Length: 334
Image (cartoon, rainbow, N blue to C red; front, side, top):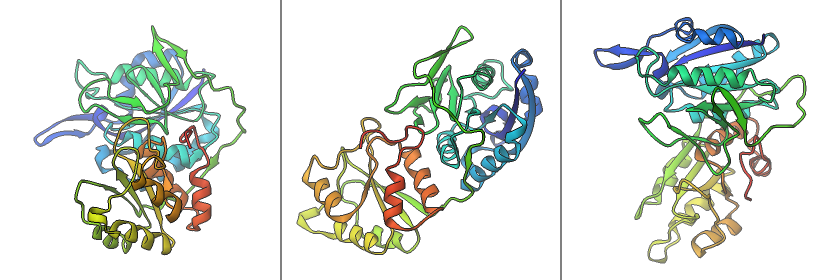
């Protein structure tokens, strides 16, 4: 039987009621004991990395998850990470950059209701995650939730309460679980090295600025002194405003670029990505200023990819090259 390591980080799946709301209190061993059917799939070991609401996780925890996988990589056939749903898509994307070309599966899952309660989705999600982790076709980082297998770079939480909480953004689900069996839509037939490529640095100084009509461009000047990169969530297919014909926004972006810092233009629209060449408000800023465009990358992937890139280099040309180099199907429509 395959040996799978469960790495527990907390989240709703591990929560119990307290006087001030749900809080993670259930241990990794208790979680496993709630799904005895796992014994028929594999040998399970557990490790409690932390026990936190995922709202409290950050890039330090992503690095700790990657180190934990690296430290145990030779001893196990796969890894399942239990995680809160609120930031699980960010963690899945981050791990996709921190652990690359893994022939062993790294699977994130969680639940919308605690494994402590009777009508939970936790047991099914956990069983499905281990089912996928044990499969011969499973490789790299994926998120398994509500019977869906989603690439780590394509996952997003799209519902706050429903069991069907996660969607694959602008890329097909890799597989689904039907009747206790995996049905693949996008089989992974690539050849993988014996040992993956692990990275050990992230730059947390990345800011996401959501544009609203009439926003004051001086906010960019303030942010430049505190951050190494800004991701502008623009409108529609992408562009920046010039209210009454003034160039304050484009001037502020030019100042960022001239300072050797990174500017990415993305879109607030959930699907189909950006296309800055369509309208005048995006065309010139893309061609004349050297900003990066996200195209069809989900925001979670854009944020964590920029953190990963800037953890390696601040050279603008290298940043551009690495940003547009696909990792785990994170960017396709360039």
